[in-house]
Length: 239
Image (cartoon, rainbow, N blue to C red; front, side):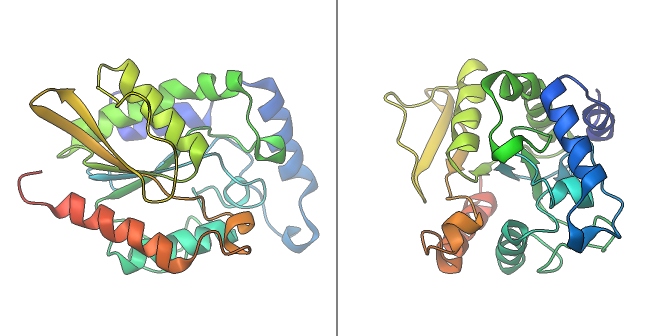
């Protein structure tokens, strides 16, 4: 897996997790009534975006009738509607909506991935499934750093993604503050390679799930604040 394209092909062909294989394929076969005319993607999801991105956005896993249907991260559901509007307002996305992987949307200086690449039942992957997907994310982070200026900012959407990012960077030799900062919207964590060398800055966000957006736990202004901060960090001179 020497390039992002190599990695994407490896992700799409993965069958490591039997439970997820059965579930994603069943969803693609049965479908929802409103999507009966769709040919579901029904496979693991590769990342999407600019291979030279300085911003990495990380979700939990594909939605069963969203990305698992359309074949692109955060595409075809209300979480994606919120995310891409925010990315567009912050100058990272060419358009404010993402409906289909062939709709012409492009990301500039941003890349979207997920901790788990298959849609899990009840949106709850197991620890074993999370760990099976981890090598894909680790390699993705390495390749984004090698194909461009490197990741400067990471926005994990939700605690699952937040914990996984910090776990990976800690195990790769970065210094993560102890005790680990508690997850919360807007929480920032500076990752250190050494005492005098900083790594990416993590800017946490609540996930734009309907559970959060319908209840007002996450507003568009709150999401905009996170991506405005990400934009400032990405564009910071000398960063």
